[in-house]
Image (tube, rainbow, N blue to C red):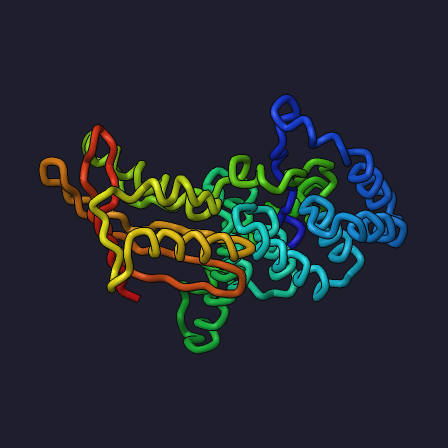
Length: 325
């Protein structure tokens, strides 16, 4: 079953757009080739030498995590991938690879949580969706087995467990070397850190469907606001607030803006998600309620958020923001 939990990554770099991706391509490729040849020690030495001069490089850090996992250093690999999620929360692949390790340790709840974050970060990440399905199967197996132990006379549970075993057999037959948790892609992650937000954006989770043009415009305004916050694009973030916006408390608008800028930029990485969004529109005013997820470094929190927006020159701008934790 574990062989079907894949961490084959998406190619995130378009060569014509991000020409600098080729700067260190040979070094990434050399590490990959050594790893593919089973020369893990040599590959690790190359990776460490590279990171000694470029410690923040996400691509080589990612490859080092893969090397650590392949060398059986699961604890170190987990630490490497967790640090990547903290520094680059808009990248979904480290979350997926964490799930691969957790699944291999039968920590399926942790694997599920990591994959759900990967999918929230990149809803189009097919590998994470497939892996999550496999994890759900394992969780179902554990739950049914526990239920059977508590109710031996239940004749329905064995049949359900038999179906799950058939899924195991199917996965085992269809597994291929590419489906195993080994990364060989040379361009798994963007080389340029500042390009991460555009190549792997932290897409906010939107569970509501816009019912009309106004709703769609408002939804887009909220998504753009959350995306700007996540990518620490302070100028775009602050531009989402209208002139009528009054900061909470006795702060002046200028003092509030300066404080928000300082708080956003001092974080090593931010991820903001939006769930259960509802919109109420009256003429050129709107009230939006949603569940906000916020992650910055080790800090994770959710809160209920309400935004009031006014339409100004065909643009929806925030005029009031209320948070209830």
